[in-house]
Image 1 (cartoon, rainbow, N blue to C red):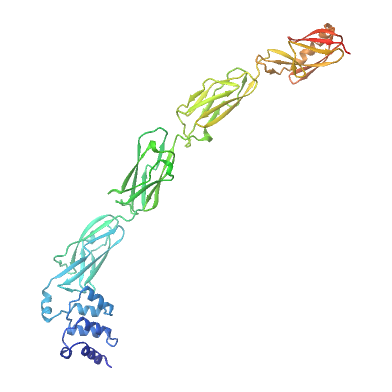
Image 2 (image 1 turned 90 degrees about the vertical axis):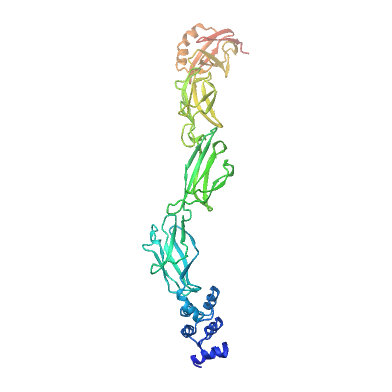
Length: 499
């Protein structure tokens, strides 16, 4: 079957006999669909038939969609668009003005992007394909197109304008003109609102907050949100979130103003401890604020810095005071901190001192009576530090005599005639501290001969030096009572007869 025969058969089967035989009646929508559905008839033949007979309907948007679904190409759609429903309509069509409909009349686009505007041109009810249009004013966009945007309507009479909107937020109004420069009466201007892009940066001032215990008043954190091009982002929710719930700062969210700014207020007295405050936008962290308690001590740098390890004589004041420093975790002096002192085998001039502008305190120390170590303990808050000192004995004030570790001077001791015994002789200061005396043994040795000549019952056998003291050995040679005096120390010796 030839295409002509098929086309004739299709028309005969699809329309009443008189219409088909005339061959000039406008085609109904069903006729056009039947023609498009026949694989033996090309689209060009369908378009030619439509141009000769025209159509008996005015296509609606639904009709255009249906025709495309059944395979209508641009030639078929153009033929339908150029066709009038009746000869009278064809004669009247040229007198109808062109009109344009904006789809839609207002666009909102972010900076740095491309605007897409659609305009449908009609003459009466018929879409006008192939109509050149100009969107006047678009060349005035900073960073936009170099000339006004242009577009041509498609088969459905719709022209699509695409043009860059630049990097700056602004609101523009553009007029639609034909390619020849004619206006389209009744067409409102296209409004294009260029807004900021999504948030890219959130700058917060100050980025660091320092607090001390007892401080009052508030601190304002100012957050400014900008896009990647530096434009302020208004109406954006910004969240302030502490890193721990016990920090004393409540989490909250606020929108930015027209300048992209939002303020958060912190009460100094409400902050329990230091930490970080996160700045979040759309769930992402864009920055943070360091909250630092400047009154928090640093154990590593708090303690005695001078005077530790000094030596002195019992019951004398040290040549230099003990110096104690208090530093914060930032390494800064902590002023006004109370430091208390207590001492073992020593006395401090004052029990507590307040740190000065340099974070220092000084305390005078008098050593105790007991020779040996002394200790001064400093306490600030819960931190303790100790300073070790050394106490030396005072000048020798006398000697003591001991037998078998027991002191016997000033008393009486019993010995047996003929049996030797040893006495330890040592010097001591006023406070009873042993005073090593290197010359003590020599001094006793020098008096040995004189002692033996004068003493009838006791004889000094030997004298030995013993680390600053002396060990003296005696031998009783008869029974009786003898008084023994060495360097001012005296002991009465009762000598019993040997059995």
